[in-house]
Amino acid sequence: MTNKLKIKSHEVTEGAERAPARAMMKAMGLDDTDLGKPLVGVASTWNEATPCNIHLDRLAHKASEGVSRAGGTPREFISVSVSDGIAMGHEGMRASLVSREVIADSIELMVHAHRYDGVVTIAGCDKSLPGSIMALARLNLPGIFIYGGTIMPGNVNGKDITIQDVFEAVGSHASGNITLEELKEIEDNACPSAGSCGGLYTANTMSSISEAIGIALPGSASPPAIDENRNKLCIETGSTLMKLLELNIRPRDILTFEAFENAIVMLQAMGGSTNGVLHLLAMAKEAQVNLSIDDFERIRKKVPHIADMRPGGKYVMLDLDKVGGAPIILKKLLKANLINGDVLTVTGKTMKENLNNIKDAVENDIVKEISKPISRSGTLTILRGNLAPEGAVIKTAGIKNLKISGNAKVYNGEEEAFVDVSKNKIKEGDIIVIRYEGPKGGPGMREMLGVTAALYGQGLGEKVGLLTDGRFSGATHGLMVGHVSPEAAAGGPIAIVENGDKITIDAINSKINLELTEKEINERLQKWKQPEPRYKWGVLSKYAKLVSSASEGAICK
Image 1 (spheres, rainbow, N blue to C red):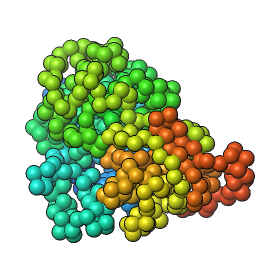
Image 2 (cartoon, one colour):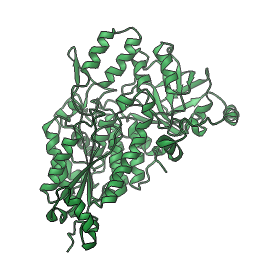
Image 3 (tube, rainbow, N blue to C red):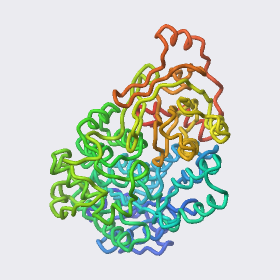
Image 4 (cartoon, rainbow, N blue to C red):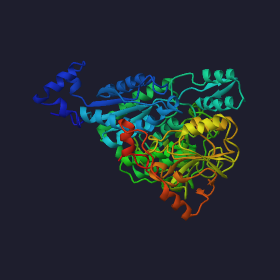
């Protein structure tokens, strides 16, 4: 008789006709007892390409231990992962967002082919988190996510530093503000351990969201990669997967519209990465939830910003962990009726039930009270106007001046812009336009941290504006507008901006406009010709043909 928990695996382990499959699995050390249990995929993005993932093999073994203890047979496998920090600023960055889709595809294919009954996914670097959760949503088998954990902060002259400081130091050195020796000291000390970049950048944003949306265990987002608690959490994650099998709780039972609303509330309250918009839209699509970019602006207006986290604030993920992690933020939001406490989570309990077990945080400087927020509204603003009819995104955390008007300096690619930035050719009041870096036009929608950090390092972070149809790193801050849609390669208005055109970025009123008449814009658009694609074969060419607008999450259709 088939084990009732063997939802799929009985197709490869039961019956005389499956003797060849069983023989193959016995070659790996499994026996008939092992094959009589549910088979659970344990997918990680382990590699030696990035500190975010270098330790994930260890965590996968711990998750497997939890599965085994709870009566399952774990099967470990890996997917790809791109290091954004290493790929930043050159051609390699075009692969980053594409990797999100490849990660989701590869996990889906492995589980589908081998008929696993449930899935644990473990990820560390930016795109691997949403990619893993997208796979869980697609498969809709009992599944759970666990984060690899944050890196420890570095230290120079008694000050905690992160990879953000290295990128900004490049700009400071180019401006003559620091010596080469000082730059080298920052470089040598910024990243002291395994783990994902330490501020509230994209990885730590998405890990916090994984708790808020209910697909990860409470308290799993913030412990550092090297913390012993991370091993324990991985074991617990593996055993929890077996409970999900018993209860037949599946990702789409958890990833509801209300759960996505909770995730957006968390994103806005924490001051998270602009990439959170892109990834939540993509995750919603895979979960068959009708989420739109307008939901982010609707929720922003009613949610206060309460977490003082880098890059717009002062603290790193380790600091948040010390005061209780993501659960203390969620509990404050629940008490203020800003999140839905009735949504189901991977514990088998509701969000409210999970948070009832969390002690109220003692007053601290990291997470403010709802009544005394950093700002009265959230930090990710959706801008619209004649330059971005489908929307654009700006992160306002830590920005004092939310409006700027100036003349455009136009660049058809990141490299062109970086040359001028590095030669100190950008002046106060300029509006930098970097185009043909969108999902199709890049292809791959590169992050612009090299440019934005250099501007900050030169003291221009809030003295110039920048807009692009590309993306930003979670470490980017300042008057930087990304995800301009439609993108230039799709014939969006950003394609027809000329040097000297006046542009206004107004985050107060959620506007971004080119100071031209509708007639002038249309006349320019009629003359515009689509450029030849940068890649005509291979994965980047395939991606460019399939990918949607950033306003839809840059998903492949």
